[in-house]
Length: 175
Image 1 (tube, one colour):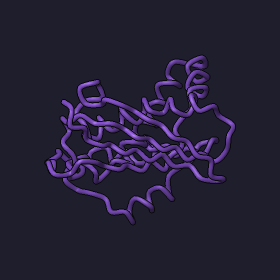
Image 2 (cartoon, one colour):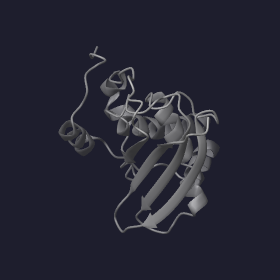
Image 3 (spheres, helix red, strand yellow):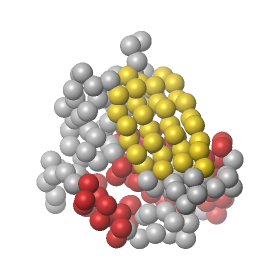
Image 4 (tube, one colour):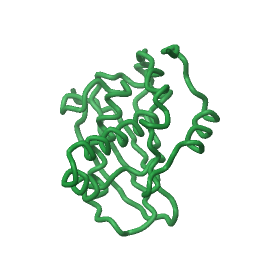
């Protein structure tokens, strides 16, 4: 069993990503590759002065069409797809716990960088489900309901051979 207060460094993070197995579509299977890091989430002690937080997710999140296809093949395939995507977001949140108030009200600005124009924007934006679930499970915010998340805005950019999702949580003054 690992020590729950243990954190991983950026160098260790990069090494884990490099060694992680990849599926046919280039996704890193976090739940299969890094199960020992599930226990490394610490309880947050937040800084009330910090008004925003940026999380970078370098993993390919499934599109809506991919999720529907897996649902049609077998319910367990879809569950596994969602679990892997959510755990990828949890992994990207390592070290970010306790920076912002987990009970605050936030606006989310999500910037998607995708390698091509093959998927429709609405198919890509479906990844917000995995992002919000992962942020909650990583204890960045306490809930993904409307008491904690007010507005969500998306931008999308195509950069050849690059995939990155940047999530900005911005604290709002309206409670």
